[in-house]
Image (cartoon, rainbow, N blue to C red):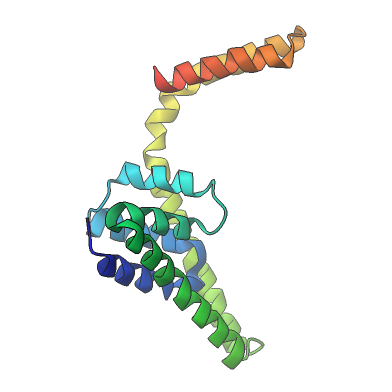
Length: 177
């Protein structure tokens, strides 16, 4: 457990990086997993996978979940506020006070985009490192399952039976092998 105030400070820091887009996930991962060690690497990617199923930005979903898990309900609320409020104020300030048609400002935002893309590529590379062995392990079984589905479709097996048979086979390969 960490204090809700400590969780708020971390999320506030990332909230001010709102212009960077999805690249914050890489920085967030480094802070939560590598720097502080609050969760393990595998846990972070499992949480990221689940966060992608819910509406809203992934990082906000991760922050709410981890805030609740690490600091309770106050941590979840403070994490959400710390991550969301600075970005809202920055957006209002940019729109209100900065001439977005100025070419120097445009170049600055293009630089943010390039940095964001670079960090996103690093994040995907880190994510894919752990997947390589898993892919090799189950690749042959999934290939065999795809052939079975193809044969079943070509021979006129009803869709319900295909789903029942292949769904069961998929669960077996995923959880028992």
